Figure 1 (spheres, rainbow, N blue to C red):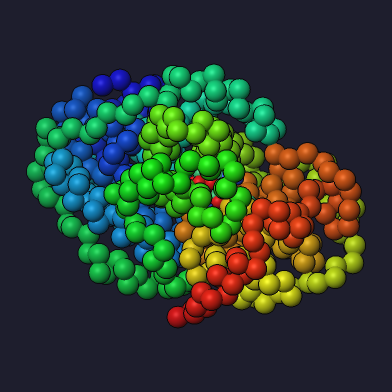
Figure 2: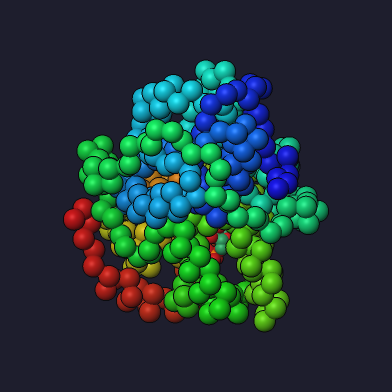
Length: 453
Ligand code: FAD
């Protein structure tokens, strides 16, 4: 089976050695449609070795909250069974020491990691690659067009990356073969994960879990089926209506890698009932999502003020001392205690469901800028709340979405106004044109607010 070599980088220039092949699964937690797993299997077959998948749990995000951690664990249980049927050994590595000990004991012939542009992920992989003498391969299994190939530099906006991605799509938006039953079995079986113990990890306690979405690969596939059959038609007209239930709800599955963006795009492009809906959806799924990976890959300040474009930094600087009519502390924001019922309803949606509607996410972050003492505080608050409570949080899409809302990233200068300077403003009147605000507020204030329970 051919895997496009442009997805794969030998990050330490090490040689293949004798020993089992280990795939350290992190961002792409699935068996189907996973180029990193397929490459690992190819390598193991070539070296005539067993294949081990070792999930690294919170390695990419050491501060992961209990809500996201439970969602991840729930999805890993069926994944372990699926791998067992394919003769592929599975284990979970709870922390760095366990990871290092395991790799040392297995003495691998090659190690495979998946691609994530975020800082912590790149750092642990870099350190690991420097220490190991066998080859460490990184495979971009998350993007349809691998991020390094889509563009070698920081892109200015969607319109600059779109033609580059579109040109490469015919090469990369292909069917993905299944994983085979692995011919070589590990001689000593690995200790099975103790799920109960993992679930009660003393390290991770908050925030309270939510059960809005079922977890795992199968649940992701069902969500895709349901979206294609019931919600994609009319997506371009209804996606900004926060009451319509018209969006895909796939971001959480994409974020954890329980579903592959390539599979979603491959299925969606065959949808011929409503071309406008299909194309609008593919623009979000492919161009906007991969633009976020580009931003985090090439802008090391993706989570700070200095990562904003110069025009936005200058303009926000000029408006630092503008009077603020309302200023809220992070705690007031977190507990949905602002004067604005719409903002509070959006925050309650995030707290109680683990997802805020995409249109409101923009409004929500822009209001945090308007009601904070500085753009730095606003960015920190928005990232804290997004990553703490959103099931799809701590994702390049989140860092980019916050930087777009507060710092004009991928946007252009607008008319100058107080506090925002030339950063685009969003008013409640914009929301009013898109959806029934009282209905949204009613629905979300009825939701039980059991913070911390
Ligand atoms: P759909 O409308 O069905 O879109 C399908 C897919 O396209 C999404 O799953 C996502 O992968 C991609 N997509 C859609 N909108 C965007 C966008 N603006 N940028 C990049 N990709 C997009 N997305 C996250 O995945 N995680 C986050 O933590 C996150 N935080 C955000 C914070 C702010 C302040 C903003 C403005 C946006 C954020 N987004 C985030 C982007 C976007 O809001 C969500 O991806 C979307 O709401 C997810 O819902 P859905 O899957 O039903 O979207």
